[in-house]
Image (tube, rainbow, N blue to C red; front, side, top):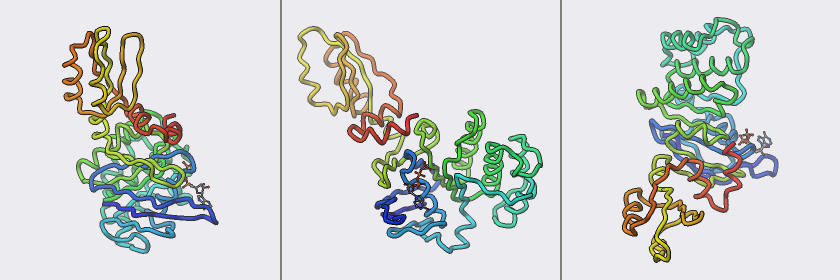
Length: 298
Ligand SMILES: Nc1ncnc2c1ncn2[C@@H]1O[C@H](COP(=O)(O)OP(=O)(O)OP(=O)(O)O)[C@@H](O)[C@H]1O
């Protein structure tokens, strides 16, 4: 498990992180979401042991990362700006990682390199997107227990992004790898993460389990007969309500079947339970804090 407790950090006099806390459970993927400058990279650098917080603590498997060599062996940190040893080819980078990481799997590295169709050239001569693919091959072949990545899918085309997501999900399912991934795009994280946390101006403003979120909030449209009593609506936890002609549209925090039962009991003329995207749930749930959400829905 990765556990961050009340992390605070100032740069000069600016409070960049203010008591940020979250947990990434073993064998799950956590998405750290936020717009530019929210504090994601700072959090990730602290987790990776590159930067020291002013206050709070970070524990990985119950231990601190800073200056813990044995623990660092089990963690791969993929920064937003990649660094490769100058002059090193794809194969040479593999040999370098083999020396660093006890779990290194050469066969897997060779497989991944051929799957991504990467030639054995100097990594520095590759495009940014190809360098990112090499970084993923290295990270996955090192078989870390913890993989911490800062905006890793940026600049990759849709096919490669999908392939990488598949590989990550596979390692999480098979080896119980624990993943923390930062992103400024909620849609990108929707089919990847188990949990997400939204950081805004250095504060954690919302943390949710995505499966729970999808089962807890419903969208429904219905129409009743003219003049029919609507007082049953007062019993519902309505996040959003609209009326178009005789049709009512509701976003409600409720169990799917329970809501359907309540509405069906009114003998409606029309009753449709509608699909709801994660984006819509966030927008309605966040209410007044919508400003922080808009930027991660591009
Ligand atoms: N070394 C530093 N010195 C001074 N200020 C810094 C430093 N690193 C980050 N900051 C400031 O801290 C704030 C948070 O930056 P951070 O890089 O953590 O945000 P982010 O969420 O990763 O943003 P982005 O999505 O743009 O990468 C910003 O206001 C940034 O200017």
